[in-house]
Image 1 (cartoon, helix red, strand yellow):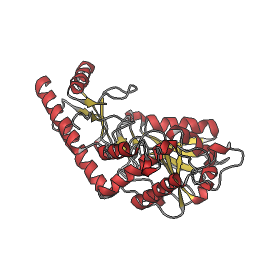
Image 2: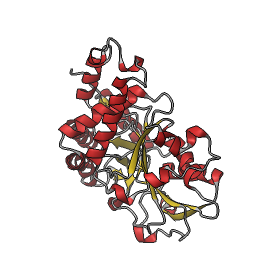
Image 3: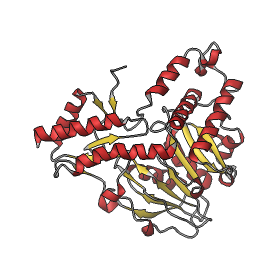
Image 4: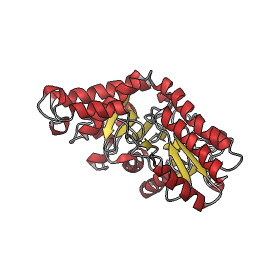
Length: 363
């Protein structure tokens, strides 16, 4: 297959070609069942096997301890913005938020509808081009939790390390755009959540990794579908799950395993993004990275040119060369290359070469 786009979309994003081909082979007839997995009952033995195996693969590859639940939910990270405070924000104990940009703001706004919040740190004065220093994060002793967005997809910034908190304050992380792109110590977190559609599969399934005690403590006044204990008790099968999306996550996890696991992927991702960051840094100012160097994302590379007209020309010419998704988010403009797990090194090399050639012709 030679007509694959050079896909740098921010999400839904590139999936491994091998995974797509395997899904294609099994699409009409899953394991000789005479039907697609999309047609099967979620109560069937075949789907329960997929559900259980996908959880087990996540535990193995991501080092998830036994005292955490792995849930496959729906509604994207945007629904988690509400579920976190609905389940974990206690009266008289504010939810603390680190404000790092567009997605952190959305999470904060939803929490403000539920109860008391505080901003523990912010980089708003610098237009969110950096992650606040860990020692600048001020968390009230009585906080219900501290919420962070580990990677800001729109601004292109990422936490290099994570805050260390007292055991009484759970750390909550929206990892939608960098989950399983690098190893993390799961035991540092009370909850990790992520839409699958950037690093782990197609849109439609949201992964929640939640410590048992937090999963069990959902207030009884919260609607049934918005309570973590509902889904934890039912092993993510309380209602009809996004079965095809879970199956696709299963295939992607197996692909990650064949690539050497999460640690190997981290090095691969760093090698990929270095090609593009080096091109920016060695351009003599023709390309200007948006994020400060120590806050740069390994998943989303954001940069600008001298004029918006030149940026439009860059996008137009890149599309003519088969590149997809290099236009920056409409809220901030500029340019962005998203280099998630399934984006091949060859695509990043091709982009670096295109950028060098574009500068040669327009510099």
